[in-house]
Image 1 (cartoon, rainbow, N blue to C red):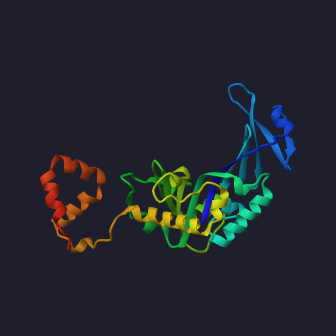
Image 2 (tube, helix red, strand yellow):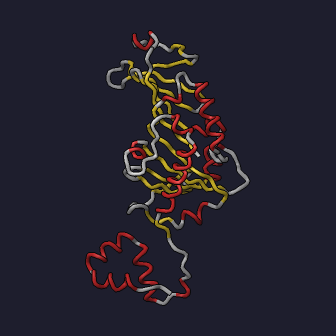
Length: 271
């Protein structure tokens, strides 16, 4: 279920190359670190390295690690990533990265699920989420998904089969739809019914894993969706009401300009 992670870890003993702000690449903790430079001053402002798809950045005495945990462990994020596999992935990550991963602070987390279904019929029903309209996700000049950008989190759904074919040049023999939630952990922790994701160790807690899955499904349920209404059975007045209530912007303005008529239409029941 876990996908993208952004974590950080404070280093207590930095190598001399970092302390001296060397402009040359160097080996530390079994990895080759390359300098990064400030665009304006051209002075060293940090170091970077990679572990497969994982991007590691060293700024001051803090290491940041970012990218998909599932892709790092399984080479893809379209197969099931169960709790047992998550625990094994984090254990392997701890053996691979040059710091105690379990103690690293989680800044951002993405969780997602994949189901075997055609994406378009699902996405075509999406209207809005908390009053926000979805933004098309494009790949190779084709829309293959939709994404909602909100203040505290983002959610997206997309045609995983098409995305894998376009980006990875892999042809899957089944139709897959992926739904994903991206959220900063501060928004999971500083609220009523907090989940409490502070360190990577929290991601191995089975109860919190289930809570994050519930959070993901709850976000999906909150998406306003177009109802499958048999239009052929509606009269002209019912079609007019349906069209009005499915366009949020027009509905809001209509409510302001014609409040009494809005109230009457709101009480009508479509048979």
